[in-house]
Amino acid sequence: MLNVDDLHSYYGRAHILQGASFALPAGEVMVLLGRNGAGKSTTMKSLIGIVRPARGRIDFAGVDIAGWEPHRIARAGLGYVPEERRVFTDLTVLENLEVGRQPARDGRPAWTEERLFALFPNLGRMRTRAGGRMSGGEQQMLTIARTLMGNPRLLLLDEPSEGLAPVIVEEMAGAILALKQEGVTVLLAEQNLHFAARVADRAAVIEKGRIVWTGTMAALHADEAVRTAYLAV
Image (cartoon, rainbow, N blue to C red):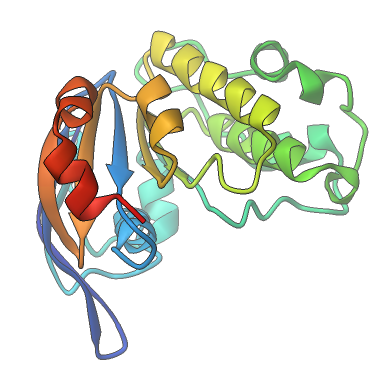
């Protein structure tokens, strides 16, 4: 589904991604792990086109999308949920969802409001509530649901558990596992190793803009040296 090869990205003259490479098979959940400033969010923004890579390949479903505009990447089936959430605060839940609507892809059933309310029951109970009158966890769920209305083949989640209460984090984990069962491929950037272990099949560890380790979550759990060197605070 996704193959990233020798990706380099800059903020001004600052060289943030320095040859990042990893692969994500279709139907799996991968977590991008690393400390603050390691390059997780820059990787996500480079994949969706908000940050234009200086060089490297981003093969998405067999097509190199590096350098494409974000709207073109989204229409190709890559969905992005930013860390900042960015719901439309004056629009209701239903109106926010309508903004994200795109046609079904690959003959799969399209996401509908009712399917999303089954995935996120809290949203179903506040269909007419304005986005600005929701809690942080509710806004995070709404942002994911709005992105799913675009029927993505690959979903990027940037720090989905950040700042959420433990009970909401558990709900978020359940939702990601349900998405996997629906056949959605997921790449999430995280610092919460416990949350990552709950949802992910495999991990890629990033340090100073380079992928320094990849493997299964079980292998990462067994490798204390890697966790200490790159993930310990």
